[in-house]
Image (tube, rainbow, N blue to C red; front, side, top):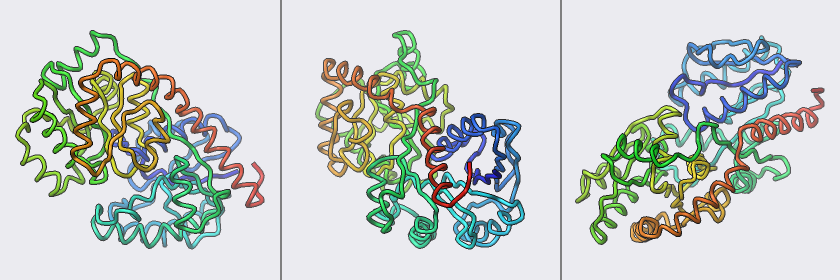
Length: 380
């Protein structure tokens, strides 16, 4: 079978959540299925590291998809022609974008619908595109996959897609994430927090990550309960907005906040493993990979009691209301001051994280693909 895959988010040294999902699942799938030919479709010069096996053929289709106008050019006009020219038997899109003008059987992975619930968190051009096209993508796909039961219910109900048509493929955790010994934790504190204990927040600084309220809550906690704690924020500022800027400038303890920018996997595992706790108070997530990574490192988690996070973390997190600065501050203070709580959450997190592996994710995604082929009458 000739399987074309949308790999436009396989960007060297710039992998985000969906990019990591694409990389980790495809690298396993193509090696496990040498009987099939995989054509990876890039929108810019590709890195040979993403050509995982001899049965992968890279193809570049310009232009790079950096704006909704270019999304339309790429997916509406160029992709249908390319699928026909490549004689594709099937198409897999790990980021959910599809060629509506093609009848090639398609598996789409829709990670979440944050743009439906909080359209104001995106520039209008992006929000309008997503809200216009993703309902059509969801109904056009021969089958859908998503990364949590929460997202499966959300997609099914909002887009009128049968729940039986959607499979859950949980994200995984990289092998580099593991508990650090005391020397490793001390080294991380010295590297990222001037030797002090610290909370860590990980993720692209998108409005839904709730960075503004986290900054306000951390400041409130230090005002009411002075300590040497720091807050380390990992991620690019691409989506940094005025709310975050105002919150940061309004802090009395802004000198206690450290921005690292993007970190590579090894650096991230060190920064995460050395933290007192992860502060992940995002008000909308499809999965929340940093939560699973922290749990694998034995790092306790403060999480928003919202969307999929209770499903992912279960009893291995201390929850708070993501829309209440006071309640986030309460959870941070409770976590910082209770060593017994932290130890219990650490133990529970290590145990729970074992279910989130990339081997499991790749197996589940391929099983979804096989169901799609069955639905479409294709033989795998």
